[in-house]
Image (cartoon, rainbow, N blue to C red; front, side):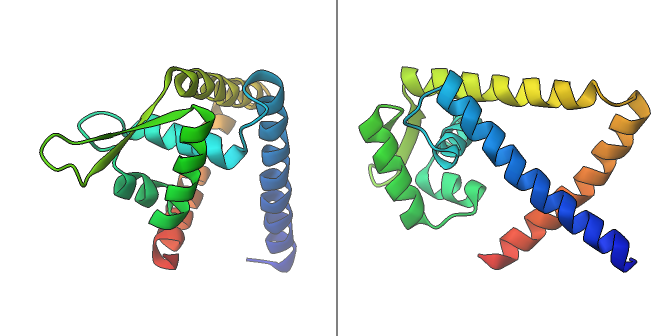
Length: 154
């Protein structure tokens, strides 16, 4: 890769990452709940994604988010206090803690999902179908790379 391409990619990733966080934070403050951070909403989204078949354990959620169990415990405690999450225990083993969205958590999660849907649709509207296909293919490779790197960083 040439130096100019390297610099353009670096600028793209840094700028896009920062701007996406700014957009997401602004959307959360305006449309969801002012008391939720982006990280907290991502915890809610992980709980929603892993709910069912008792996959929503603290260990599975921590692994999904690539955070330590201790960090997740702190986040979950905060979200329980704020009323977005609830805890329960598996009937067979009361040591296994399951995390569930409360009604308030479900509402916040739905609004957050709507934000992502609007963001993707707005971006895709600026591109042809072929450009969307190429971008999707390239971003799948970036995602594979970042997932692999994050797993090794644990």
